[in-house]
Image 1: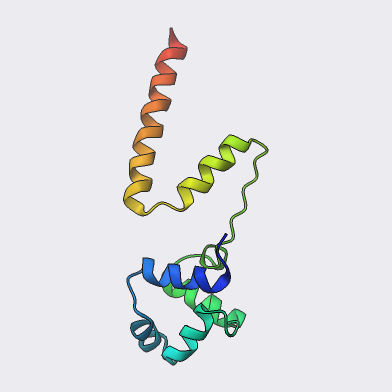
Image 2: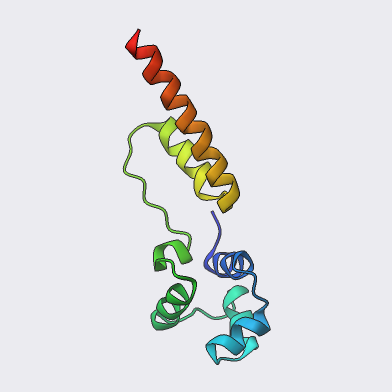
Length: 110
């Protein structure tokens, strides 16, 4: 599990921004972003909301919070893997799972 600073840095890199580019876009200093990402200081909730909106994601996703409502350990393991994939890997996973589901449907029809 990543800490808050690691989550913020991961999202920034995922969205292809340097600290300087992000600071320019959000009109705050690069040092502030650096301090948040290194856990020197904690960002206020309004900054987290601003950043989540900027990335078009939820604050939960921004801070790496995942809530899975499943009792099945295998399902949770699968979900844990999928949420950390990039978009291309998620699309590939979807194709594989869809093919498996179609195979199962054909198998159940017999």
